[in-house]
Length: 459
Image (cartoon, rainbow, N blue to C red):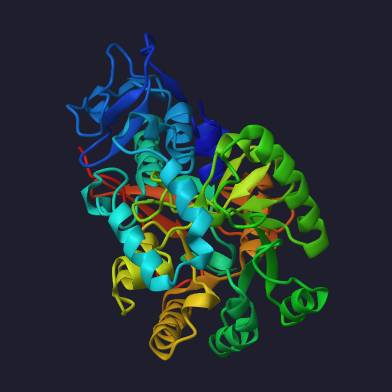
């Protein structure tokens, strides 16, 4: 039950003594794990709640110790996977809409509808978004809190002041930013050159997700124009009709073509249209990483979310989750024309030293007002880089780093620790400690200006 924990922290296994109590329930459900924290899975000695609204058992109060081991009333691996893979949604009062007749009819006529009409219909359809109690809005870090709370328990069980691990980001960065651009229309495609120039002014690299069929022409010259300027090209769905995951046989047929386009585009990343997803089908995608899972999908047609601000592996595929509100949702659902929400989200994510992943469409920022807001966002991200030590990288760079980190190991070096494995020259040894009932991090030889860590404070 330790794989997800070790993947997250990359600490020596000798510190990770975890087990689950006996008599786990046959049914999965919700339970608490400290104040304001939810878990979802099988529970020891009783059936957990069917709804996130409770009543909830508090697993924190039922943690046990056996010698230097932590004994949890649930299987940590199962709970983390249930959250990241969105298995908890089957017990929530919302569901995915990708198979509904309404969704099929909408996407059949969507290309004919003006943006104003589309946004009005979508506001009606998603009108209950602010009544969803789980995941948390606007950023959910349930997975991160559970993992970090478990680290606190291990510190107590091991009776040590600190546990070493490999820091999350290269060069001691306090967090990371990934900017991505989904290209939806001919007009958006034609604006890509201008958008790259805007990004370059602020030193923000990005990826462009291209729809291979039906939406617009995709020439080799266009793809080369993106790569030549140092940006990345990824595949976005097949034809953006919202039906990729409707049927398994149809998915298999389409994904064969998607994989072929990936090779033609020299793309290592994929994103589905409208952020529809079925993570249990990802094994058929021949890419290194995916970017289709929101952190908290309140404003997406398919509700749910992975509840983490960190990348994670789904089999061989790395998931780089979307952790901030899309520009389209900001402008058209929320009718907000400032970066206040994005600022709030970046602050919440940096509290977890996490990944700030953005989707900004060239199609929706061509007008002066929206263009100005995007430039304000870029200026804010550049400030985070310069003042708070954030790493701004294209998603392919994040994929390569996270894979390297997953293969690194910490080994004893006299009284300390050193990192072994490819990429270690950019990696940092960090230490987790408990301070005033919270988890705290320190990083050796870090050039980052600000680091933080938090976990639910319980005695």
